Image 1 (cartoon, helix red, strand yellow):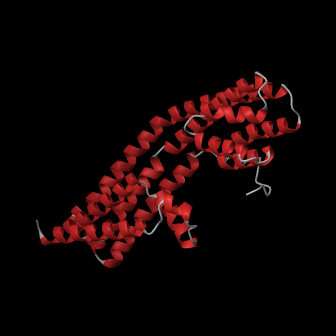
Image 2 (cartoon, rainbow, N blue to C red; image 1 turned 180 degrees about the vertical axis):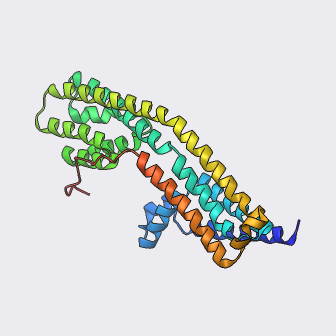
Image 3 (cartoon, rainbow, N blue to C red; image 1 turned 135 degrees about the vertical axis):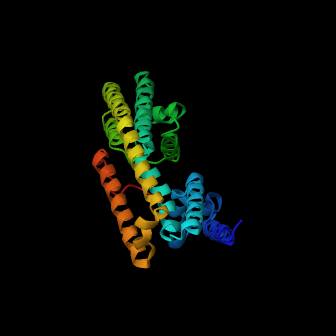
Length: 290
């Protein structure tokens, strides 16, 4: 191995060690419950939550690839460009967020139907909410379990439902909770019909969303292919001696970084255009019990 490659590997190991040490500053969830974190630790926890194990692997692999490319071509810009591209392209072209939202809606629909089935048998609302935990799917199980815990801790039903809506943080979840709040004031069998109608509406929305996601699969794949070809061309630029000569200087590297930034902005604009508009929540926090 050449000295440049050995130097690159050493830098990667050093950066990985610094990154690992940085993450260890964040207290584990077990210790966080024993001692309240300060503001700096809260920010570190939020940053750590965004760095999943897969993201950390991509980051380290990107830094390694950037250093190897720099050692082979002398273009220092790729030390930062390659890892940023690996993380950014995953965020831009991934449809995991849409699928997660659709799965969450499907879980809300299933839970609403099960809750309606419990209420139709004459079970009181609070007891039906507690019993519905066994029918909650993994996508909303933590939120429903916290709702049950609050009810068992003798929270007022209205406060517990408001907290449940805040935990779900979903406009459709607000519709369900609003019906449940009305039921706490006006007890009766009308809640069953309302929940069944709402569950059917959510079912239709889930069906439409899955169809839209399926229709977007081919255009998203075409965009990935075009972007991959563009990235391949950019990586080939340093190998074109006559064409890349002006970009080897520090000013040329800055200009090349500007071209990369323009491409990144275009991809972000494309993602923003095709992203569904955010639906505002209807049931906001109005000073509930903490």
